[in-house]
Amino acid sequence: MSHSRMERVEELVKHALASIIEEEIDDPRLGFATVSRVKVSKDLRNAVVSVSFLDDGAEAVQASLAALVHAQGLIRRELAARVELRFIPDLKFVYDGSTAYASHIQTLLKEIEPEEGWGETPEPDPLKTDE
Image 1 (cartoon, rainbow, N blue to C red):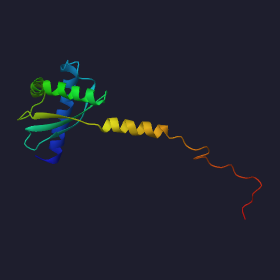
Image 2 (cartoon, helix red, strand yellow; image 1 turned 30 degrees about the vertical axis):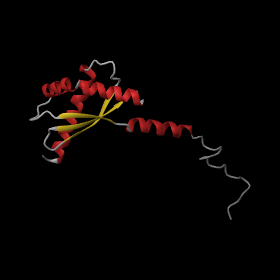
Image 3 (cartoon, rainbow, N blue to C red; image 1 turned 90 degrees about the vertical axis):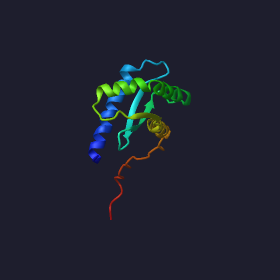
Image 4 (cartoon, rainbow, N blue to C red; image 1 turned 90 degrees about the horizontal axis):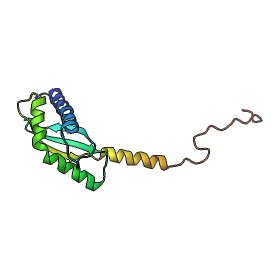
């Protein structure tokens, strides 16, 4: 399968999974989830689904992943109904911590206070002449 076709399949599966998780899963363990990436094997039989969660605490992440694994049968059935593929891949859900990491870095950068006068252009001295 060509590289661009594989990317289209991954994007199609990603969007379908995002809407399935949002619309069909009614599990209190599952917080707000975002499907950030889907990587499908060349034979289309397996897919690794990277998911990030609004509550990124360790316990909340584990509970949310458990809810997704528990609902995997429903998710695959819905995926089969929504996308037309030769095989519906087995899904492996993994936590994508990149969003939480980026948020943490942004918080750290906001905490850095520039020194007084940092980045300012000095006023020209009217008495000084360029020689």
